[in-house]
Image (cartoon, rainbow over all chains, first blue to last red; front, side):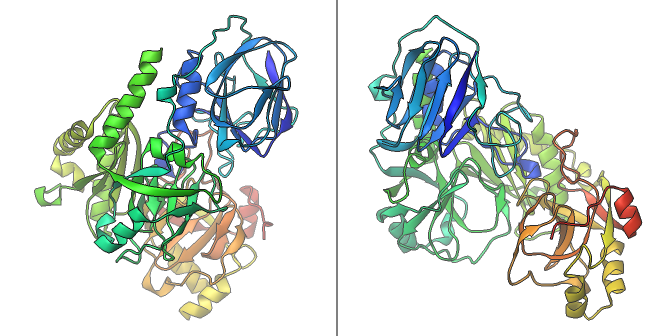
Length: 307
Length: 234
């Protein structure tokens, strides 16, 4: 009752919604970089919202099924194939014993999510299976290893397949490169001119971007503050180091830091950002907490309606 | 907590708010933060808490709280704390055995030279001070301990090491710390502890929590080895 990894790809990680409640000792949360896609994967299969999935970055990843089941693919289009036939994301597929599922390379986006009926079975560490390679925690081994050739991903066999797909309207607008930002933290230390520059410039995703943070290159913005007393870093916080190039801190971020921050991208914004590849261009756009709350509730309501 | 000390609360996203207790670092502020962290910990809908020197980041479940509800809950929680509790120090004291020597503390000679002290004086001043854990971060279990005595203030190394061995005891500016895992690091290393700072199998996970009181206890090379200390790593 398992998938066997036949090609490990660049970076394939077991993820759930993250390891929460331990940031006070400096342990980061991990979790899916595109949380919206992850939530839809579990919703499509009527899984628990925290069921373990595989986050496949870039592709070159292939699995062989040892038993029948039902899967859902969401997130990026990584030119997936099922027994060499092209399949598209944001829907479920029936899997038969011996089937080969492969993710080749990005058509658009960067990270695909593979969910299986009932979730992948994996022993949690501190209440979560989320893999954080840097902290050597989570995943199949519990020691933060990415998936390797020969790894066995266990699921409960299931022959009751339901064909479902995510309504088009509910799929995030990945083509919209305006990433919503809630102004906060030290935003007052950025002059109105600096803020105007920040919200009106194009930023290019640096090749130094990873699950910890997305580094952006473009118009430098400067704070009046040199540094601050180290403080807690919320998901999506945009740190502005001395060179003025923004870093958006995401799922594997450090828990505290002493650089000025201009605000936070929302979960939806972070999900869209996480699908950008090095070289892609994005812009930041300001939104209020009120708007962010409404956007989030709408998204959660769509998921709830589906179930 | 006195009324005018009430922390400023600011939403930083729709899932987190930042409580700022003071603009300056002090033991009193650190006590307040530890106290409030403790009270908020047990509440339903609180996802994570990140205490630091002068602030507390509260991460909450946005299905449970909207921005008004979380403000109200935080206010009420703080108001319900007996002001006398803030002055009570129910601090834990953590004692960390350290083998101080250039064998495991390759910067101890530089530190002595910079501070114009003998190596023995560096060791004595380091272990005779009781420190407070002001913040935990950088890596899991890495506690920023302050303050070191004025005579021990040293700058960070100009070139950080790519690999600092586990258990390294180090100095930077007015702080000291123990490296819980192998990481890059720019602090000046003066010794090594054989004890684990982080253990995912233990109840507290991390040996030192924010607000704890921390002392170092000098041990010999033999004691270090008996306690399981490793000499390699550089």
